[in-house]
Image 1 (tube, rainbow, N blue to C red):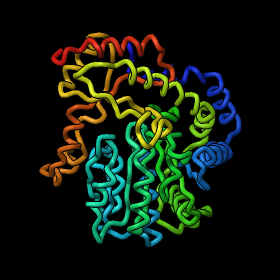
Image 2 (tube, protein in one colour):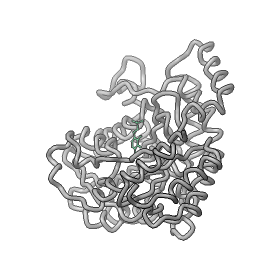
Image 3 (tube, rainbow, N blue to C red):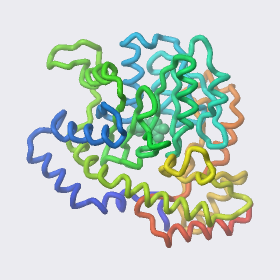
Length: 373
Ligand SMILES: *Cc1c(COP(=O)(O)O)cnc(C)c1O
């Protein structure tokens, strides 16, 4: 059986280092807001080439606290519009609605990321933020999006939860927009051994507000300047992340090798591959292959066919936010490109510990699919 992603295998590679880092924290007697967090924040900021990184409890909180901080700073107010891809994971949309802001859902293009042309047509007098999501590990078209933001005076919030280390023209995910949220959920390309997340920004004022918000709205113990939350990245997770961050580039290279094999060797008229980065203007470095997502008109049959060959696949995602029960008021809206994507996508196994032999087994199973199963 070829697992979609074995977290056990992923972390086994670093087991000795992880265990000794864990022991170091246990022995230190200091478990929250200490040296491990500071060290990780400094290193992750360096990797993303930004001035500030603030660890928080998870990716949703990272996105949430950025929007909340912008409201506290007077940059946003209730009802302001935030442009977000209609086919994103629901966390991006939750961060918007939780803050009393209005999501404006926009269709993706063939890259499955938000379409700059569609962003242009969605801009209104109430638009304040563009919220691109680097879905599947592929950076959105940030040069185009930053130009639009500049022309219209809009803030840009990147959802980088799936794209640690991706870059365009040398500029990393998390370093393009005014701020960015990262998730270190265990299955992400940089994953903790539990929940964790981070905010990155070059804006000192924003960094300072987020820093207070994550810790009860307080910079100084027992002095609360905001009605904050408890959203801290603990010392053990920070120590785990510092170990794994050292190997992020290597892990991405392994993912790229698997993706390259898939791109060159999967050849089946019933399976549509992701856009070819060799010819894409965004370049090879723009994709870190968090997921390798193919499309098929007969996706369910393809999934069954692969399962029959012992290959585990997943669907990212089966239901778009506007069709969720949580957002009943949008259920009648129509986003045909997004809805088609959700009916067609299938994520093949990919990961830093996947063997070439396993990738070849996936390729041959894909190539033997006859379109009906
Ligand atoms: C994982 C993910 C999040 C949320 O991260 P959590 O750490 O699970 O809160 C947000 N956005 C996207 C696109 C994600 O994939």
